[in-house]
Image 1: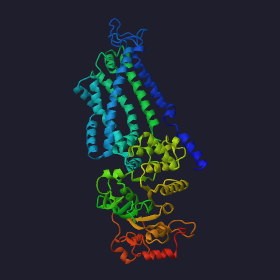
Image 2 (image 1 turned 90 degrees about the vertical axis):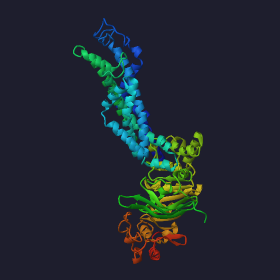
Image 3 (image 1 turned 90 degrees about the horizontal axis):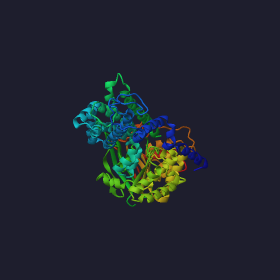
Image 4 (image 1 turned 120 degrees about the vertical axis):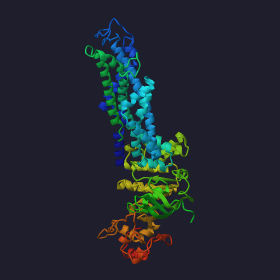
Length: 289
Length: 335
């Protein structure tokens, strides 16, 4: 190679050698999302350090009070500290939402990978199952399932997994159908590599991006679902703090103490905003060149 | 002559259509000896790529081998399951693809892609596979291999990427490399480097090469023997020197006449009248007859078999006329 060509190649390498590590801070949505969500997670993790009251202890002599130096956001109808309940609620709801997204993500990705790659009857059966689940509105199915299974976090995971895997399966299946026609898959085959290796070493890293990005917005959906279930009394069981339950409890006093329902509502909106920004940022950063 | 490394006999590849079938390859026959480079030339749709993919059993899902045999090292690989063929892939036969950008996995380091076959097929161990990859990168002329090992495909230039693709093809030490238009996507100077590299690898490592191209000049530069394909059939085979000097099929002659040649000043560049036939209903008799300037009544009667002429073969009944025309007006100089 001539010296000139060598220099050009070096320049090309230098220009492209940024990748994820060097670019993330220049993506505003990613930075915004991480900041918002990071603060949320930090507060949730450090809950005992940033609150002064037990979120479940009642103080019936000081109910429905406005903000004081002891109760920063006041107390609810049972005299419980609203700030503590918000923070501990974040702890519950974020944990449940993250775990609830994990199972559908893994199961849906595997199903999509296999059905997209092999096609045939596997794909046909998968499509039937997907269409059956998709035929029902999300909330109707979730509420019906939790109602049938009984309330509580374990059953929320099961219900969300039964409904949620289809989105991942569809996304990954579509990506695999496109990716498997690419020459690098043919090249991997012509090198005599096994199907399992082609699926997991070559196809999976190429198709997972969309599923990860979707997972971020799916957490938003799951938080809303958990809060909705909590509101309906089917979710996290009292006395554990949960935003949905807080909204439901505060409803009675909406005309006099609107903040009791509004504050957990704002917490939901901020979390959703953080996750949406994170999803956007990730989509930008992980997009193949 | 000993058993050839690759012997393709009367290969037929079909695509089922709504009405009837399309024979993408209909009677491809050629041999490749150990250490030899064979060029397969033909225009788009002549079946050359399908013939190549049939050899390694990587046809598109809709296509199937309808007849003929493909013998690799004396074993017919068209019979008996995919396991045998998978064992051969990489170890005995490997492929180099046309488009080096899409033939590489975009999210995997190029070094790991080269090391993959040594790791999983040769059981070289992580360290050994890495060393093998670095050695191959040096062999195909990639400067500073230990740094480039870590690069992703988009960080390399087109020529570098094609060198990586060639290194991958060599990684499990095959005897035969199938190249599907490996230089078409590259610019001319890089094309020349890659062709020289392939020729050097053939000479130094003794690997056989099948080189598919639509470019006669590329074939002349790299191959000893040539097979010309038209409408799914091999119409002429022979050494590059004989075929270029005295083509014995009118299609070959027409193809050679349509190549610009600055040594041999022609006052016009000829093109072949008409267009290639529809493979779902090919013409009766010789498939080239509607476009042939030497056509006679017997050309349109029955399908023409490959006629052996010493070391050469042709699918033309009147190959003498063709050879005489080539002698009267030489087509290529310096071969």
